[in-house]
Image 1 (cartoon, helix red, strand yellow):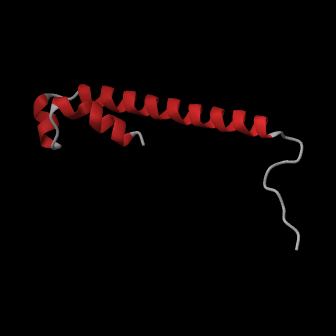
Image 2 (cartoon, rainbow, N blue to C red; image 1 turned 90 degrees about the horizontal axis):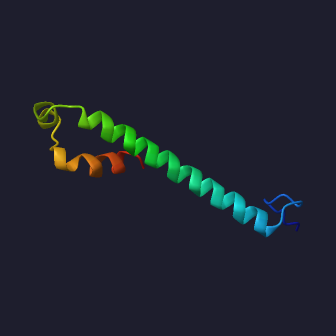
Length: 69
């Protein structure tokens, strides 16, 4: 029985680690950006509008971070 590697043969384990680190960093930046955009949008709502959707102003950052996942 033959086992096939899923990693390209011309890449070293170090290259794979750098790629993995870059991917994780990119994902973290995208999530941070999404959280920021969500928080900005929610912050622009009035207290009455926030109440209509079941939120209070103090929850905006928590909700934005959860929504970004």
